[in-house]
Structures are given as structure tokens and as C-alpha cells.
Length: 237
Image (cartoon, rainbow, N blue to C red):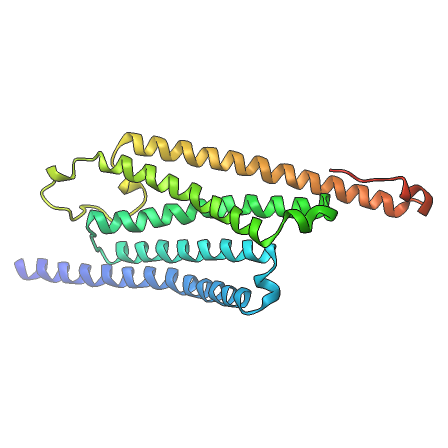
């Protein structure tokens, strides 16, 4: 009986190992493909001066960089969980904080990109004076500062957890974002911050989209008017 039980355990272990390898492969292959595409686009955006000096492409580079880092960290944590690897709290905390950081950079960058397009369409004569390389760099710094402030708050809330009472710093569960919310306050704060960012970003993007649509309709009306009527017609967002 003991030999049969041992054989069943061995077979189950092999099946579980094959399943982990299969799941890791199924997710890793598409991830590697998208990472290759992102890295290629990042290299392209930095290889030519026309891309490096254009505000829209600078913002696109920032967005792609954040998405690439986030994708890499997410896949790394998934592979670690598939391999049944338990990390130490400091290591997992570092990975989680970087993930949260890049996760907030993306929607905030989309907000800045929407505002840039709004200015380009609705205020074309002032676009070159408003959307400059220095102003774009300043906007990116503000985005990263807001995301960094969010991480700082998470770290402060995380330090309230009594790690000194633990027998070991090795985690009992797999590393993940929700796992590192060790207190109810951390989870409540994250939910409130994410909701605020989502609502604010949605409001700004929707407003700029409506403004661009209105400007496009005005432009279409202007094109259908006679030259004399078009001179007196000034579109506004």
C-alpha cells in the first residue's frame, strides 16, 4: 500500500509540474512577443530626432516604458507563483511597489496625451507655445511625482504592520499586489486612490474627446461654407 501511495504521489507531482510548465509557457510566449514589440517601439522612438523632439512621441515613450515595466513585473510574479516560489516580504514589497507605480503612471500619462491632442486640435495657433519639450518634461515629472507620492503612502501604511512579531520574513503565500495589503487601511486607501484616478482620468479624457469632436464638426461646417462665410466663422472648443 505504501508503494502504491508513493507512486500516486509521484505521478501527481509530475502532472502538477507539467501543468505548471504548460501554464507558464502559454502566458510567457505572448508576453515575450509583446515585450519584443514594446522594446522595438521604444528603441524606434529614441532613435530619430523627429520622435525625440515631438511632445506626442515623448509622451508615447513614457507610456510604453511604464507598460513594458508593468508587463515584465506582472509576468515575473506570475512565473514565481507558478513555480511555487515564496519570496521574502522586502523582495515582494519592492516588486509590488514598482508594479503599483507603473500602474498609476499609465492612466495619468493618457490624461496628459489627451490634453495635448485637445490643445493641438482646439487651439492650433497656441499649440507650439503651450506644448513644448520643457512643458512636456514637466508634465511627465508631475505624473511620476504623483505616482511616487502614492507609493510613499503605501510604504508608510505598510510599515505599521508588526513584522517583528513574525517568525520568519518568508511569505506563506505567493507574491502579489493584494497580498502586500497587510492592513485594512492599506486596502481602503488603494481602493480610494484608484477610484479617484479612474474617475478623474475618465472625466478629462471624455471632456477632451467631446471638445475634439465639436471642433471637428465646426471644421466640417466651415469646409461646407462659402469662402466669405468661412472668414467670419471661428470654431471654438
